[in-house]
Image (cartoon, rainbow, N blue to C red):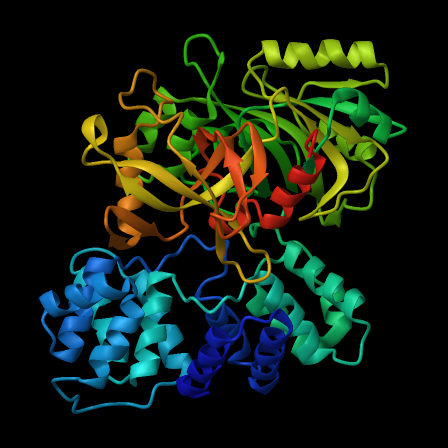
Length: 569
């Protein structure tokens, strides 16, 4: 398929705001794509060349891209930089300069989807000496043959900023429209989403839908060594109301850690986060514990991983654990400084058998049968089976005393539903319901905060388009000086955000929504000043959510639900 055909689709999508029209445009392209190119097209429509769970990244920053554009077009880096400051979009910049290209390319080729896709994939695989030059050449090669429109979308794809408003939900519904237009829409959409929960790659799901139809989608299974979307919890208004929800409830500690999903196949072990990140290399100590404690040939189990104090075994804040999740080098040093504890609570697969349909009480027994625990290191989550409010309250208070977040209330009769907040699990925490929001902008500080971003614009997600809507300004809770290891300073946050600044005007910067933060607040109010229509009153920074990507930030619908349930609304 010619890349120009995909570019035409991008253009239409960028100009279209209506969700149903977007689905129609995407479905038409998917229908017209051959089986070989379909996974590539599906990923490229999401601005990706790897599925969301892949560790691989294109890894080209703005400044390197400016040099590539300069070399490919004959314009100086000063000219490119000037245009970039004016537009805040290197895609528009390259489109403009390619139209006026100062040098022609002798061996210009017609770009195909395959050529663009494979070149961009190869960029992520380049390592070692001369890696930057090779990356430079791979992008230059396709830019040199690109039309202005093609160049715009190639650059945006490389930088992870496609700007066509196509989120996962639109891809899902477009697959249904493309390959099952005569079937009952809701049934098909649910089936496609279920397949994606188990195998999180809409490129692969699209090909299965095209080639093998409904029966093919029904046969999708989780695979050991590949991540899946885990079951998520909902917030309970109170301990009492949470207990009333289920006839047979079980309470477990809600640990202040990170969800860890452990895959084992003989001697091979993989570790994934709830964000589908492969963190196997970061936790060799956890791998050793799995080898010692898990007595099964093949299984997939889930738990919560905590950072603990090396001397006492006391739990440490999540922010310390996040340092290990992100660490790529000096792993052994981090193992000593920040040891971990794993608290297990779930099993979904054992020796070739999927356990989704078994009730939780049975899954817990199966889990207990294959684990030889080591206290304080690799153990079961603390559990209490009761419907008695007094006993439950005592258990809840003991969780808080043990420096954990609260408790989970789980339905012992429920099946496991991957990827959904279905009410089988409820969380009870002592604080007001917090929000996980992306930072989409900032204002440079003055006085003591000079040289740093001193306040931050927060954005919630539009679930239909994937775009972010402003909902507040954050400055409280971030530290000017670090007094504890878990503190986050203005300087640190500024350094994290700087690579994602896309434009600046009169001291206010626009930032790509890459960093997600947990935010507390006094209440949610209606506000005409923000694009979401809502504003957080007195927002306060809690922590950086390194375990969440922007696609997992809270959406406008959740903000509306919380607003509706506030007292005195």
